[in-house]
Image 1 (cartoon, helix red, strand yellow):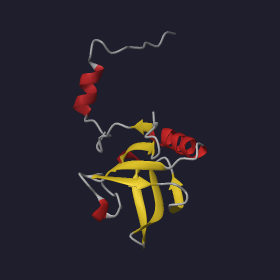
Image 2 (cartoon, helix red, strand yellow; image 1 turned 120 degrees about the horizontal axis):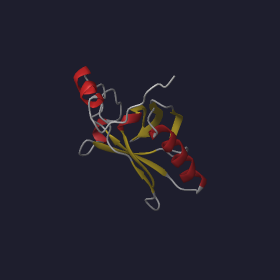
Image 3 (tube, helix red, strand yellow; image 1 turned 60 degrees about the vertical axis):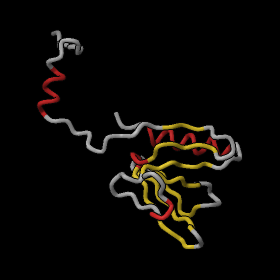
Amino acid sequence: MTSNRPYLLRALHEWILDNAMTPYLIVNTTVAEIDVPGEFIEDDRIILNIHPDAVHDFNMSNDDISFSARFKGVSRDLYIPMSAVLAIYAKENGKGMIFPEEDQDKSETNEQAEKKSNNPRAPHLKIIK
């Protein structure tokens, strides 16, 4: 199955806005292809205000989040792969959700797949004619 992260993020984003609060993202800045202002990164994390009054051209797809925002008066385009989002929460009360960090390389080797298939605990289905 595909990741549920983008679906949950969209729902929580809407929920926070519907309650007249400010959605914030916590982002892992070590993920490849991320583009955020480096001077605001602390401990490989950045916290971003994604309220509609704070961002322009906001787009949240199943793969990424992109928007432009001002940092110290300078407009910047940001790009955040979905796997980099660690949390979304309301600034005013802290309610939201924390997501587990995803492995960037989820591909398993043939050897790993074979070991899983030979596991005696694994369920087995048979075709009955």
